[in-house]
Image 1 (cartoon, rainbow, N blue to C red):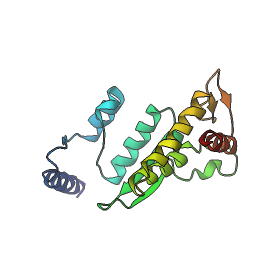
Image 2: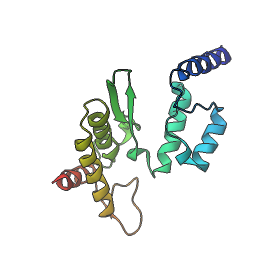
Image 3: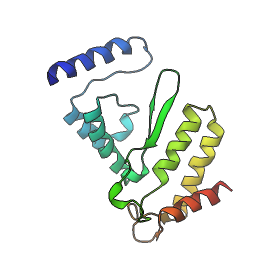
Image 4: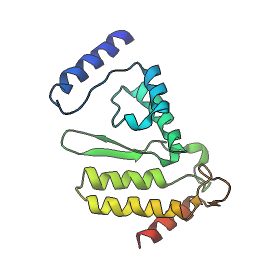
Amino acid sequence: MKAYITQLWRDIVTEIGKEYPDVALSHMYVDNAAMQLVRAPRDFDVIVTGNLFGDILSDEASMLTGSIGMLPSASLNASGQGLYEPSHGSAPDIAGKGVANPLATILSAAMMLRYSLDQAAQADRIEQAVRKVLQQGLRTADIYEQGTTKVGTAAMGDAVLKALG
């Protein structure tokens, strides 16, 4: 059954891809996609896959940024309505401890402004505020390294708000 579903998915993507001749379509087995993602992440713009492989590849891709706490996500329909959330999910094991990285959630809100609400300038402001805070050396525990300043969830969120000025 799985082989059939995989082939059906490939057939549907190929058929829909014909409607977008300006978009290059390339099919890969998931193991090769994982390897290519690590080898040359900038070669990828969008990855379309089923839930299982998408979950695996998004977790892998998040580590290219240093942490899954840095990766926003969106699932959009054809009219631009979407579900925006951090890729990491709810992280119940660290809930209430003040150690979660809020940047993926903040950047997911920026994506919502850009893609569903047509507020690109406001999205740019949020993204710039996040860049500014990171350039100041503030880090939550998941991205902390020697020479930076470790802060908790609330402090990181407060710093982004302050950088929005």
